[in-house]
Amino acid sequence: MFDDINAYFYENVWTSFKTYSKRHNIPRAGISENLKLSINYATVLYHLKEHIPKEKQKTKKQLIEICPDYELLADVVNVSKHKNISNDSPFVSRAENIYKAIVITEYKDKLGPFRHIENTVCVKLDDGSERI
Image (tube, rainbow, N blue to C red; front, side, top):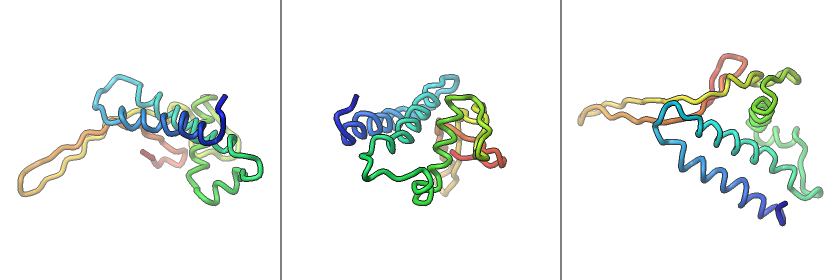
């Protein structure tokens, strides 16, 4: 499918990231494009490890030791595919806990108020906390 790891990274991971980056701040409600693009990016990023040559591959446990969020990434990818997961005490066990949101932040200074609007994707973890 891809010629090598460089091609996989550039043609799949990097282009998915760039596509998401270009689209994620468009403040439109009611469109699931951000959600679709973020799940696509998460999926290709998570599966990058499978395209690394065997002699350089790390186990999932080793990757989690390097980057603890890799475990959350795995749960996001798996729950988006399977709708619900229950094995290994996942961080997020239900697909409906991954959702789009518009975040409006208002700043005030001597020049007056300033609003920043961001169209984002949130993940509500099973412990009740949220990640954006």
